[in-house]
Length: 429
Image (spheres, rainbow, N blue to C red):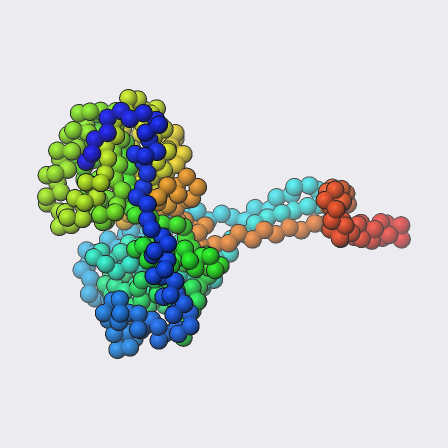
């Protein structure tokens, strides 16, 4: 890791900047794919799968059959199935607690307002292929969709890993397709002869998948959030365990060479020790080449005080923030920009990635300044309802009339005035 000792605040923006991605070039590749799927449907999906993934979907079929989903369970070890079921239960418990009962509020006598949650009818989940079968993401996205009552849950993935299919069955996915890349996003956004059109698309992916999500969002299809490479920031002091800190840095770095890893500390000794331990631990990793490239691009920043560290971390707005410091919970109360926070020496970021219960679909690339991670709310719409009695309109009506008149919206005023006049006539009768 590159050690940056005591930078000035003026140097922070450059130190914390994420790599700039050439979105224009990527969109030039993705846009024709979206158009091809829109115009040709299943035919395009089959052709694109042969071109990019070297698979024959005409032979295997686009859809995964119920029998294939059912057979996946027998292909997994009992230990893995038990782990997935426990993770499912923990995630469900945490997200179920996010349900809110309808509460009717009387804002004035006779004026009652409330809000109810309605599940988005059709949602799409994208699960990447690549070298890691992300069945954990099926749980993270499928559980809140299931709890929200989404009627259709469409899953697209180029991976045929049985754990993905097993997790899909647990969360009640209604359709599974063997489609990857930007073409999968297009299929869910526009619909094809086989793939149902959805109203909102969730899930991680490479730069082409991300670009596809951003492009369909411009056309009115909702997406979970903007996304970039995965990232972790760790704030550690002399109470931290160096081997734990190194392990957490590497757990993020092994996602890929573009992963973002940042260590912030007030302790020179801690930073030096972590740097030494990193090399030892990295040499034992199967994905050490990927991790090494990410670590080479990472930084360890030394600061003078805890206040500086907290300010720097809020400026960075990490996807994952680990606080391996004394009184970590008190420090966490001062963090205003982060996707998810992990407290103390025994709360690894891996726990949140898999099974503690919180959602691992989080804002990256500094979007934690304004975005939350995926939750139950991500899969529902909030519909407001109001009911005004005649007595309530007599109280509220003059307020609305005065405001409408001031905005020169006469029809708005009249909609109230006519009703008030009718009520007045009823009284005189």
